[in-house]
Length: 496
Ligand SMILES: Cc1ncc(COP(=O)(O)O)c(C=O)c1O
Image 1 (cartoon, rainbow, N blue to C red):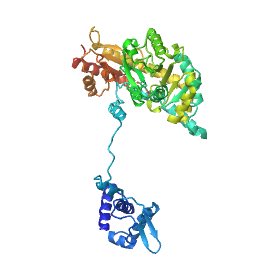
Image 2 (spheres, rainbow, N blue to C red):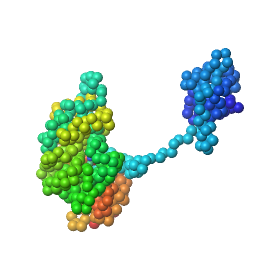
Image 3 (tube, helix red, strand yellow):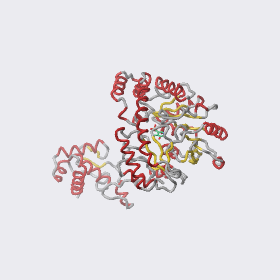
Image 4 (cartoon, rainbow, N blue to C red):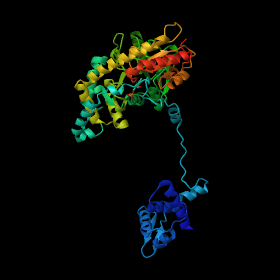
């Protein structure tokens, strides 16, 4: 009876999991005990008899019995034999009594929390991200990979023990200094290096702000339409999202919004994501005043400010802040490559210590050799030259894309372009009523990835369009891809 059960189990395990014989026997015996087929306190047949009954070598049986002994399932009594330990619980028979057991162990149902359902139910990335026109994707081929590898190797070779530890003090000091110097000069951010906290990118910066500056259920104002990553970060931290519409001058809070006082206001002033509008100076002052009135923190996401192609230069919103309520964040995802997972958060002086400590405790940041390589990359001027080259390449692509979209433009009530002066994407705005999701899908069938503007809208119904990235599209291909896109829009009848 016992040997029949063991043989059946071994057979199943051998076929299913390809385990070696002694491991199959071990599993089968363990299961027999948990299942009550071998009861607590019961004496086992001798290893010789068991080997004979099962048609196995004695070594195989002894190996299985020894392992079960080490794990406490079996006990040997000198001169008397081997017994099932009195403490072995009969878990499976108890489950069967409750009607729960099949021969295979049952897996817990994949039950998510309500928050988990909401987060997992709105997955955002495309299946194929590295495609012409995917928004937010840079041209990785332009990245000086060989140089980068040399720098990384150098810092790995030089690594002394504390560089392998967690990163304390907000990150590697020379990197924080290099970031501070860059931001002071190019983004007019008012800061000292100790205000910089190196993070694993904007996503982590946002979560840190949400956790430290707002409580569960507090309200965060987000732009409508909004960047998915930020929406998810706030959802994940239990904040209440209040969408505020965006127009060609950026976020435009009205009297009705004041009825939902914010604790946080999240904005992308340099290049609103996804419409591309640049927040005007009056709007910036208004927003800072509104934040003051509500005693709210402003989270400025300056994700692609490195690329400005036309129009006057724009500085950060933080640069206008006189009472230290703007937290500024940036990322290396767009200038280097997204998988580098490095970004930065600039916090007001009053928050430095709390943010450093909480960042350490919540995230256990690390990657010091990588941070050291990046610091040298910036200090030696490689970052500026990479930027210069990238700007030139993107400017050409942008120009070619704009030319290929021209046949769609010109009609007063027809499509128009927003957000093309800056960043790595533009927005082709389409007449209200256009099914931009279906259109994006049709364009997808041509091997191009664009995103429908309506997919970024939280509450608004009036915005339609396509978010078109020109970062990744190869220069030699972009005109052809642009014409393909234009033809598809025309054929779909969405151009008027
Ligand atoms: C508005 C915005 N912020 C930030 C990021 C990048 O964030 P991360 O540093 O987490 O890669 C993106 C990427 O597409 C973005 O569109």
